[in-house]
Image (cartoon, rainbow, N blue to C red; front, top):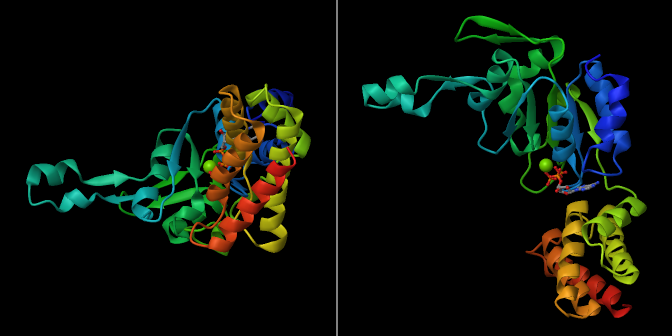
Length: 289
Ligand SMILES: Nc1ncnc2c1ncn2[C@@H]1O[C@H](COP(=O)(O)OP(=O)(O)OP(=O)(O)O)[C@@H](O)[C@H]1O
Ligand SMILES: [Mg+2]
């Protein structure tokens, strides 16, 4: 077993991401079965942190790459560096063929994290389909075939349907085990607020939790917002409120100020209706403080 059952609990307990035990367990079990994992879900709920924490707990080191819209097979598998076409012979020789990140990981015996997989078009990953399904990677140019070690771990993360992201092709998605990472339960987030902003009153803590819950409902059920407040946003909001209150600013002002900031993050800034909706929500909750 790559991750012994006795280690499950220790990995979960040492994570700074709280309330995602189920996600951790699913991921570690599938990793033990040798499958690549894809963490997906709304922004700021711990996907990258969970992936890194699992990879850090393994003996084998790992490489990490963040996918982007200009990503191609060159970055994934390898190819001729753009400067290999240079008129200067020295430069051209220095920048010849470059291995991509998957090849470097396999050749140097390292695991791999592909963060934000859907920021790149799925075509960038076409050449690793066989690797993902059958464990072999043929490098045409080098005339070699790389074999995936049995205990090689690949974890990817993605936001499905986020603005600026590509739709994951069915063929690529099928080759991963998708694991949904959503917002943790309310009591977990309440605990997080108490940890990150211990001097906040119960009233303002609940107002922040209500703001988070309501924006998520507006996103999920009504599609009125492009996303709900993330756990990351909730922590930022709590810490900012605490700072303002410590500086002598009243709770109402502190809360509405923090909520407006996060409102801009989650609303569609080009859509006045969406901005207005979160602002009204912030004011309504502030009024009761
Ligand atoms: N459940 C949680 N417990 C504690 N902290 C959390 C939790 N969820 C998110 N955070 C905090 O939010 C921050 C962002 O987390 P992370 O970058 O891992 O999220 P993500 O899902 O990868 O976000 P994105 O979709 O934007 O890439 C981290 O600093 C993390 O500490
Ligand atoms: Mg991330």
